[in-house]
Structure formats: structure tokens, C-alpha cells
Amino acid sequence: MTTDVWLPIPPEQIEGLPAGPRYLFWDGGADGEQEFPGDPADCAVYVVPYMKPLPVRVRPLAQLTRVRLIQTLTAGVDDITGRLGSIVPGVTLCNARGVHETSTAELALTLTLASLRGVPGFVRAQQQERWEGGFRPALADKNVLIVGYGAIGEAIEDRLTPFEVARVARIARSGRTTARGLVHPIADVLSLLPDADVVIVSTPLTSATHRLVDAEFLARMKDGALLVNVARGSVVDTEALLAELKSGRITAALDVTDPEPLPPGHPLWQAPGVLISPHVGGPSSAFRPRAERLLVDQLTRFVNREPLRNVILTTDAETEAETADDGGR
Image 1 (spheres, one colour):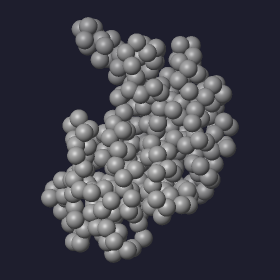
Image 2: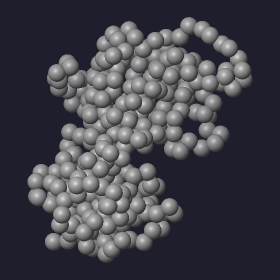
Image 3: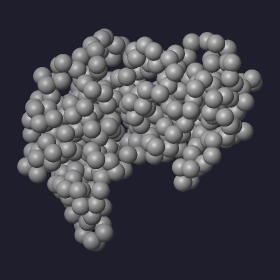
């Protein structure tokens, strides 16, 4: 059995790694051309580098002929699942559930509050030395709809609770009941939209959610509602969103866009009522300690042949787990 583990964090910086495997550092390098740290055929566990371009992250895949576990450091794995055609059967793909909830939920709340309270306008006025007050909506007493109620959606609700929102409605891939109440199936989304003052999207990008937020979805949102997207850009139909923004009927706060990165000159930059952050929901100071804890736990499970966490699929089964309700970071 091969024992090499490729880590995108220097192994000597991670406390508590289990004995047994040979730990090798590989994150693609600054230019993406870093040489492999060992023979890819000896790699048993490949931890996908975080915040690297896709060609870098998938570069070793075709040569990992005896890999048993591919561990991402993202919650969303849509970019990896589409490129597993060259991987041998029986390889387990796991995501980073538990790593990004804190940071992503924090940004979702930040974008919501900043948009409602008019912070982008304050910044522009400050740059022009203008004192402009006014009456702005509060988050308090609003109805919030969370589309994508996995671990990130739950963390978003955790942070909404102290803000005295009127009601939180929840949507996941399939319906269920939680300690907080009912989680509706995705089929109910259109019927729930008209009551929502704020719609926060944290669903993964799958064939079922690609352009889920389309013209019909947006038309069902109430006048004056706010759309917040911390999932994937392609969950939203950009042209349909632009049409609604230009009409002034709704507003939006987007941490992700389609296309991404958003190129200079794209009309979304100058659309009225939109706040854009450059896909920064995951990368914060909260990432590293949570990523290290996940890796230590997962690798301990792997070495001891215990059940792995956050299993998304096995390459000969193509079966998605419930973690698919988490959005992408």
C-alpha cells in the first residue's frame, strides 16, 4: 500500500499528524509549475491546494494511479468532480465541511448588513467628503430565506439569530425537520420567495442548481428584496439578475459572480444596487486552524482505517452525500 500524503500546508507546521505516512508538501508553487514532491504513483492521499487556479489543482490527478483519498479544502467540489474521469475506481472524495462555515457565514451577514444599511454609499460619500444621512432598512424584523441549508446555511442562521429577524425559512435539496424547525425541499423555493425580504444563497453548484436563480426565481422575489450569493456564481443567471438590478426592483450582494473573476467593463460592476466582493467568503484567518484540525482528524481516520468524514462520492459509485447541501468556498 502506498503511504505518501501530499499536503498543501508544510507538514511540520501541522501539529498532531498521525505517524505512518510520509508527508510531502505540494501546493503547486507561486507559478503553478512546482515539481511534484515525489512519484505521483506513490501518493495515497492528495489534499487539493486551496486558492490555486484549477489547472494547478487538477494537474496531478491523471498520474495518481494508486491514490485512495482526495481531500479538498473547499466545501464545494464541483470543479473536482467533473475531472475525475482519469481516476481509478474506489477513490474517496471528501470535502471540507467544518472548515468554511465560520468565515462564509460571517461574510454573508456582513454583505447583508452592509447592503441594507447603505455602507457602499457611505464609502463613496466619504471619498468625496460628503455627509449624507438618511433612513435605511434594518435587518431586524425582516424575513430571511436561506437557500442551501447545509452546514454553512446553519452557520448563517446562527449569526442571524441575535439580529431579531422576524423569521428564517430554510431550503435544502430535500426536506427535513431540525431542532430549529422545518427545512423545505428545493421544490418549494418559488412559493417561499414572495415572503422573503432577504434571500441568502449558499447552495452547491450542481446540475440541479445551475442557474437556479433565474428570471422566474428573481421575478418571484418581492419588491425591495435583497439577494445575497455566497455559493457559486453560476447558481445565478447573470443576465436575468442584471435586468432586475437595472429596473431597481431588487438589490444584490455577491461574493461570487458568473463570469469569475468579473472582468473589467462587465456591466455587473456598474449595475445599480449591487455590492460585489471578490470571492472572499472562505479565505480569512479562520481558515488555517480549521483546515489543520480537519486534516489531522481525517488522516488519523485514514491511517486507522476508520470511516472518513465528509464523503461526497467514491469514484466507482458516483454517490453524493448529504454534505452536498453546502455551498462552495
